[in-house]
Image (spheres, rainbow, N blue to C red):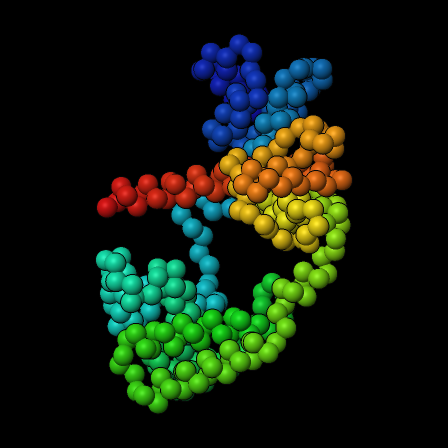
Length: 344
């Protein structure tokens, strides 16, 4: 009864004559919540189980409960989490931060002898990993031989969070490459330390060159293009059953990316081959009635090639999702670029 009294006060206050879902959502958001909406529904059902407003209350209660149970980041800021891989760039030693800042200034001023901004970001990440291990092991926060030995032992025994297997040689090589690059750029370390870094990096590169790259093994197990498209369509169906819109968006993008190389293959070429640069809306487009192969095909304007697949009618859904993903990604890039210009 109290819930009904509260709602009738809400109706009188806002002059509602035919409440709809948005009105019940507003009632719930004003402090009553999903529990209050549930009590209101129970009260209304006592008087009239056929009340059409019960449908609106149910919808509002479902949306309000989902919002209350959502555990995403609030508008008040990021939730706290403990860093387990690297320290933040602001937590690096002050001398290192000064070197990295000067490096960035030089590159932005046009000095090509300084590493690119992408390389600098990767360098900062690897240095953060190194410092985290130093702090965990109680060693000085500086690059020294004991620290490098300890860090290498940690990396070589660390398991990937994605695969559960030891880190691949490419990861070890990339990490050591940035440590070596930073040491050479700073120019204050002993010759023995720099020589040791260079020798370890050389050894890692040789081991990487002599090992079979994982991507070729995974590519071999993917199957033929029709198999890829069928698997991608299954992934797309799974995406539609995901619980949250964000998860559905991620899974749809994953399915589209997985199938793209199979959909856009030229006749006689294997999966992943690309004879010309293809860009939706510019060099690649959907056309109809081509050579009697049905309503759907893909034409590449630059090379004159036409791409077909027996499963293209179903795969068209994947292409549309991929186009939407590329469009949204470009909007984000443009927005970030505009923000940088405005800050300057």
